[in-house]
Image 1 (tube, rainbow, N blue to C red):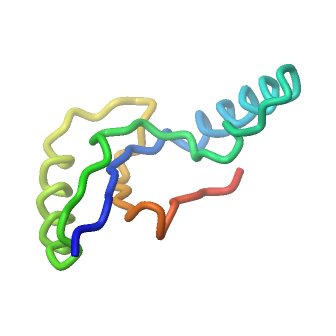
Image 2 (spheres, rainbow, N blue to C red; image 1 turned 30 degrees about the vertical axis):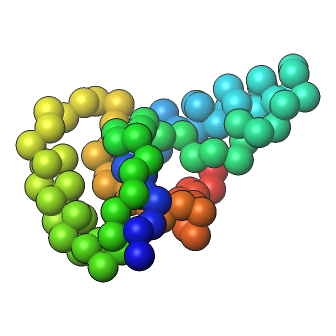
Length: 93
């Protein structure tokens, strides 16, 4: 069976805190709270379908790929691979 996956990088916690503050300000100013439901992240790979039986293999391959990327000061290179909608990664403020 094929499941829908996405891959994202998380911002550092100090930057994440600033993003949550900005999101709160926007929500208060506009009344829109949809942005408050999404963990601050940088999408590394557009959502894609892949056989869930091959999940361990793709995690190994993506981890190896990400380990070759240059380090950026504002990103914690944490591999988030999630099946959609079964698991939505969330890190509270």
